[in-house]
Image 1 (cartoon, one colour):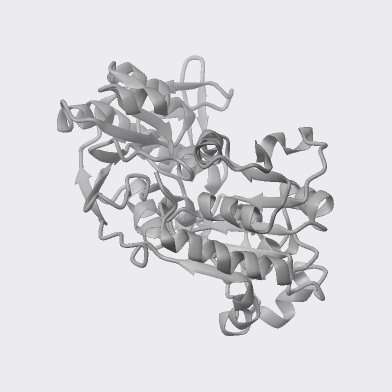
Image 2: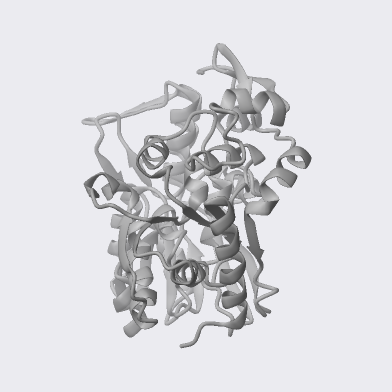
Length: 409
């Protein structure tokens, strides 16, 4: 395994930016080597003690790259949830999947923690999808650094007055500001000097993602239950209750039911229908596939239907077992190139997460990646797919519009 020439070139570019500006953003598409490029920058700049913040599932991959190329600087790799346990002194921060700190209008607790504890240090930010949902994601992505080009704007709200076309949107009975429509032609010239961008095409990737939709028919009992819930907003059983007293809950309950599970008002969950899982099993018999689910109870359902499965990536890569993983936690830093195909049993409402997840099969040597989506025609899951496939979030507002819901809020 060797460092590719373009990775060295990008590392040299990134090192120059980091030396000058104390912040560099590597916007490199999946499989082009963001991690290795960042580690090379640390080596070029002669940093001694580096903190690499990433997702839990990506930790082993980062450590593997570090060990393979025998870097001599000290490296601590940690996930966001464990960041509070770190007390060491570092001279460089690498923020992997940096779009995670780009939420707006308010920063998350993790974002504030990174800013407070490490904002004075040089930062390498990494992401393949830094602003898929809105250019407003740029603000906090840079705000974590004291050297942000927007440092004269101490809050997102002040920044938005100059860089966002602020409009109004209604949430229930309340009207709030909508900051989604950013003024990108004002933002991009300011941040461009901080960016190193590289695409899969530039890296020589010729592979493409073929997205296949397969329709199936859910069992009649489940569809009757969905119809009753839509009509009455409540289904009462002997011991449990399905309650949809808000539009958000109605959306979630329908989404769960369409895919064979339900979470009751008590907090307990259970499988109601294995029809979809059994349909997938019949379609992909004797195929080494990876399956993504969304709701937690769906994992239990899939385990009941697929006996030859694993939830461990190492076992998946070394055996003939299929892989079952949750879309959200597997959308970043996970390589599923050993799979013949990726099958979405279900998926969530985030356009960004969707775009990241469908690219898990991609490697340079692979020409075609087949990704399958299974749902009923005209179902809510179908509508969610249409939104996220267009790089948009599926929202409560859109749900109410499509289903003609005035109340509940």
